Length: 175
Ligand code: HEC
Image 1 (cartoon, rainbow, N blue to C red):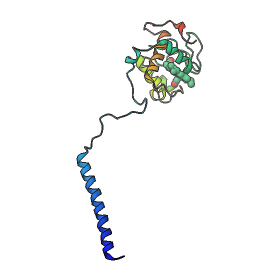
Image 2 (cartoon, helix red, strand yellow; image 1 turned 45 degrees about the vertical axis):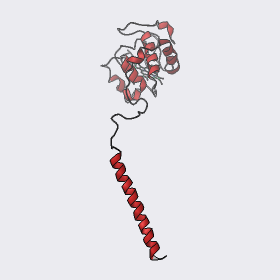
Image 3 (cartoon, rainbow, N blue to C red; image 1 turned 180 degrees about the vertical axis):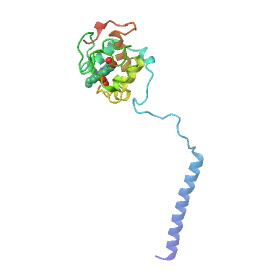
Image 4 (cartoon, rainbow, N blue to C red; image 1 turned 30 degrees about the vertical axis):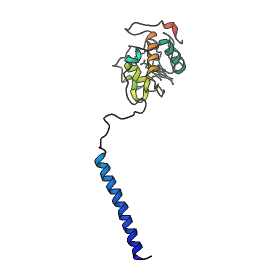
């Protein structure tokens, strides 16, 4: 290996280092360093979604099917039926959170008793019970589709509202 070769090698290395540095500097200048104002994507259900627009399209009959599949293993829907793993859901819409008599709620949910089960509260709850009330004993991952949540909420309305008119007769769903 003669010194000419070493010189060439050193020169080549310097040149490529220089080239990398140059392109980095140019790129820094050309590409603006901006962070998006909003995250470009969101992990499903880490954001609250306004449910009102979905309620306009909601279908209580579809909701009854979903409730039968997803909720009925833990909840009764008929007034007067005994509580299951979870409280009886008849009349839950519009009622104070964690206010069914005789049911032993978790501290996490009882802590929210001052609030009412509005459509939005029900939607937030059903999208992720654990996020709505950390430490809740309702072990449901959550329903990610807002349209499905709206259907279920429409069905819950049909089970009798505290103060709100019923749109569907209570007999139409699972019992
Ligand atoms: C694995 C059992 C289980 C399933 C499935 C389940 N729940 Fe629950 N649910 C519970 C339990 C337990 C509670 C009480 C939570 C607490 O005290 O923290 C509860 C509480 C609730 C409440 C609050 C009631 C109140 O009186 O404040 C609502 C509303 C509710 N569930 C709706 C639903 C709906 C709708 C579904 C189906 C989409 C569903 N749950 C599926 C177990 C379940």
